[in-house]
Length: 456
Image (cartoon, rainbow, N blue to C red; front, side, top):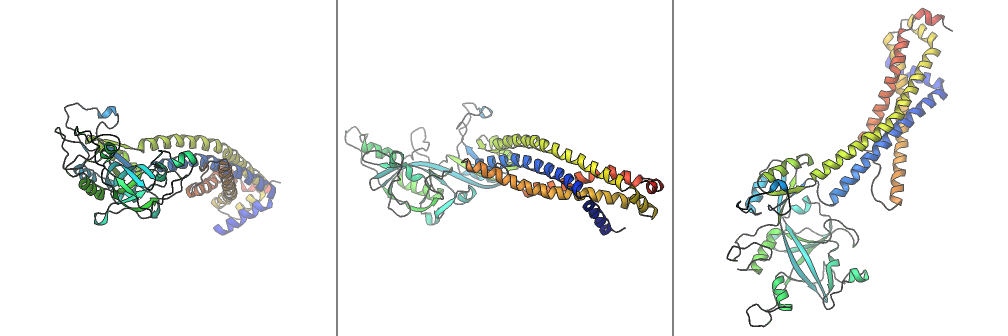
């Protein structure tokens, strides 16, 4: 018997017993919908947690610090150990570690910005040009600083204006009146003071030479604006408040401004003189895959530096949500088990009602495997139809759950059905149907032809 004939006979048999078929399919529908929705809740929680983690930084990123920057029992060293600093030699060494895709030194400075009646204490973070895209800093207006021709440009966070205050009163318009200062960061001329020590000495203190005269005010510089982080004044992300620039152009500018003087925040020799080299505050490392983050992090730690990442946090969170998925999936599987029992019952009843038909097929020389396949296909049909309808219900329930959650002011995706889960649920439903129909099909195959023909 051809396979198409088996498909036609099995579907015709199900259509003859519509009510029983519908009720059995309904059981599979409920089972599939239950297990898919339950698993989708665990996947949704995991997806939302990963998105939240990414808002704090890339999941494949590692940040390298000097030893002792923060407490880590595994990094305790003796006082006699050579002091380690973050320099260009270390940057080159990290680039040689397997799975490292990009390395960027980072230099932090605090400056004072002046525009009209406003002043603002800004925190500037410098990095390499390629780090802007690697760190996934959202681009709003303008472009990323590229440091071409050594030109220093600033890239503002979308909430940087909140740091500006009225110079004469010290009041912050945003925090006191919920109004941003009248400054266009992209167009207005803004002056910057890098030598903060000299600024405060000229404003509040003396020159330090014992003469009692006030120190001369430091020079102010105009720096062009390259662009801004995407988002409005309330759209927070981890890049919202700082100011960013290309690191080589900043180093060049700092060496020119603080010529023969110690740059604020930079170490000095025992005699108080500055080093010729500028050391970095941290180093940003981007790894090719989240699975390799721990390996690279351990390699950096073994070099005597401190490295931190979100890897341990991510792994612990994912393990927790995998357990949640197993529990929720087990709850949904109970419904599918009940549906499987229903399919078995339907197929057994079908065999009892079609005993004579089975006997005639055997007498006419129908292959026993064809008879078994006929009933397996009927069970598979039930599983397939129930799976498709159940999956459709799952998408509807998932959309409803997410809409209810969002209506409560929460932007998270509580229920998430990826394509692989949809495909797996269909395959699983068909397999459950065929497994449920396997033993009834064996009974049909083993029926005695003469006994089957004589039955009423």
